[in-house]
Length: 76
Image (cartoon, rainbow, N blue to C red; front, top):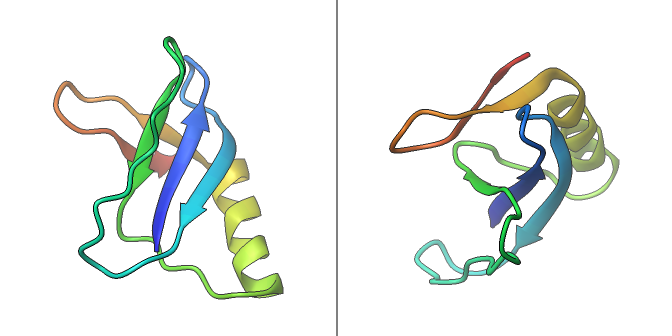
């Protein structure tokens, strides 16, 4: 599963998009111009309530860090 986030200019996560498929699938988001989107790596989600709790924790406690070549989540 690939997980992407929409975020605001301060790095705060505003929404999630999860796309299922094989590990080597080539799916990606095509955001509207000006939208800030980053793919999140190294996050595994469980189905059900456990996965929802993890998404809430990410949205509450992490921001999108913005280095020049790659964006990552970092503790807020």
